[in-house]
Amino acid sequence: MSEVLHGVRVVEVAQWWFVPAAGAVLADWGADVIKIEHPTSGDPQRGLVTSGLVPPTGGVNFMVEQPNRGKRSVGLDLGRPAGRDLLYRLVETADVFLTNFLPAARRRLALEVDDIRRINPKVIYVRGHGQGARGPERERGGYDAASFWCRGGIANALTQPGAAQP
Image (cartoon, rainbow, N blue to C red; front, side):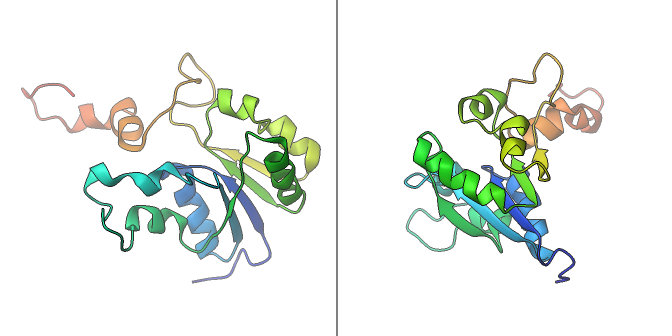
């Protein structure tokens, strides 16, 4: 893969697929991506056995591996001051900060754009959100297909005439 982003450091505080997949593409292009996960539970995607896609008895969990390929991972408890302090030390050296945490979590954990730019004014701050940053549902989460298929109108557009609406 091309190394066009060689020398770019990305700190990612994100879960599931939406933003982690973006971080994986940046890693594919040569960026040094550091994913922050909770030290004991990790990304919730790790435990999604009920989908039938995660091997219940071990093996490769491609639902975790695919959006997290090429990254380094650090376990930090961002709910504790010591965990946030370590995150902030990483942010000092970052070129890009990625997150998909909801607004309430970003406020509680001091991960809003002003918090991060107070530490590193030059960082590119990227937040992914299923419902957008403005509007009546800006505080609500969005989970993959439900957001981009249903909320975006794609499910309705693909529904056959006369079929039940999604």
